[in-house]
Amino acid sequence: MSCANQVRILDVSPRDGLQNEPQTVPLAVKRSLIEHLVGAGLKAIEVTGFVHPKWVPQLADASDLCVTLPDCPGVSYSALVPNETGMRKALECGQLDQVAVFTAASEAFTHKNINCSIDESLERFQPVLAMAKNAGLPVRGYVSCVLGCPYEGDVPVEKVREVTERLLDIGCGEVSLGDTIGVGTPEKARHLYLACREVADASQLALHFHDTYGQALANIYACLQEGAQAIDASVAGLGGCPYAAGASGNVATEDVVYLLDGLGIEHGVDLQKLAACGQWISQQLGRDNGSRVGRALAG
Ligand code: HMG
Ligand code: MG
Image 1: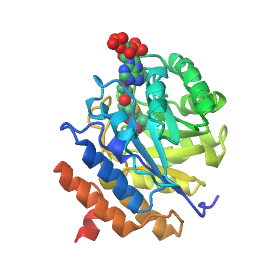
Image 2 (image 1 turned 90 degrees about the vertical axis):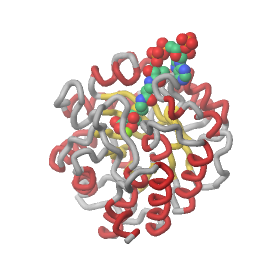
Image 3 (image 1 turned 60 degrees about the vertical axis):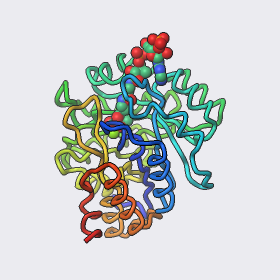
């Protein structure tokens, strides 16, 4: 199998990148981050999540943010919706192009994260999918813990494949495979990706790899060699999961873009502008830039 000619990048930094920030990030900074990402050529951005503010206080401004999103034709804005309540709020804003439901391949993580079993989560998603269909919005489904769980340890590939298939069966157009705690290594990632390809086309799968153990880029490369077409990433490597202690951010978008450039794969992102965005948001948050490429370009 050879690499795709073109890869879609979803920058998840405004949601996954910021959801675990201890200090409240002002709405104006979130909006500027999105503007910078659009300016760098990102065509898909996960802007927030309509989740319970008690559990994820950083995203309590989801509705306020979504009604002021910059109007950018050709850019797809998406948000997490865990249930009907979240979906109703998302629809009220009227500015989203896609929503995402999220579950896991681990029962323990699903309980901690969304307070239900995997089966219950899929039941809860059915009305969400019906509402999205009515509104003409595509839905992506996330599977967390695809290469390991903070509570259960190893997660069987068969379980990930099963949950992937069930998400597609209930109407998700795309499934994103989340290595939530970044424990995967390349051959495991390749094996997982190929197992999921048994139930999904390449166009229906995305890679969502966190970089806790520094393996995310290597894992992505292994899957690119098997034809992966979509990658989730976070500018400056921002992020972490509130339900997975110690989990670091997603793979940095700058690092993914640099890898794709080296492989001659099209992505549509301006690396210099993206790196400037990464430097800017790191300064705003008072953090070191988590992108190796971003740091190298900053000199
Ligand atoms: P619950 O407590 O089971 O919900 O929470 P409930 O239906 O029992 O309702 C309880 C109360 O919550 C009610 O209010 C509801 O109205 C309210 P009350 O009547 O008591 O006043 N409620 C809500 N409020 C706001 N927004 C909502 C909502 N739903 C109910 N959507 C729930 C279930 C899922 C809402 C909760 O557990 C939650 O918000 N969890 C947060 C999950 C989260 O955001 N996790 C981080 C993102 S996932 C991730 O990072 C992984 C990913 O990146 C992939 C990867 O890396 O693997 C995607
Ligand atoms: Mg994540």
